[in-house]
Image 1 (tube, rainbow, N blue to C red):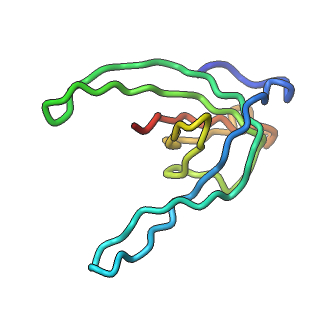
Image 2 (cartoon, rainbow, N blue to C red):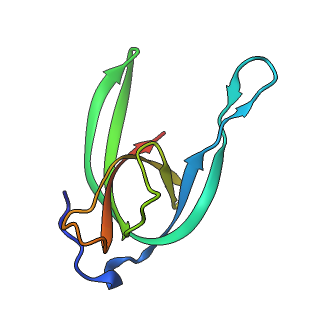
Length: 110
């Protein structure tokens, strides 16, 4: 990971925490919608970019580490909206178990 957050002053990016809220589409399926739960201050750090092939198309994967103040309601499958980009949360960890900060490993959705 990009390193443990020690200083709250490093939370310099404004992000939206969003939760998936599917709605029936009237045809037996679901329409994907996202609901904003909160606006948060965060530190967003790009970690790596990797390339791969999926369904005969070249595809790049960009991962980020997002640090926020500790919240119990953040979980895998949610996302952060940051500067027009969707960062899907893959995992969250309270690194030093002090409930001060939460480190989320995210993958940018295209």
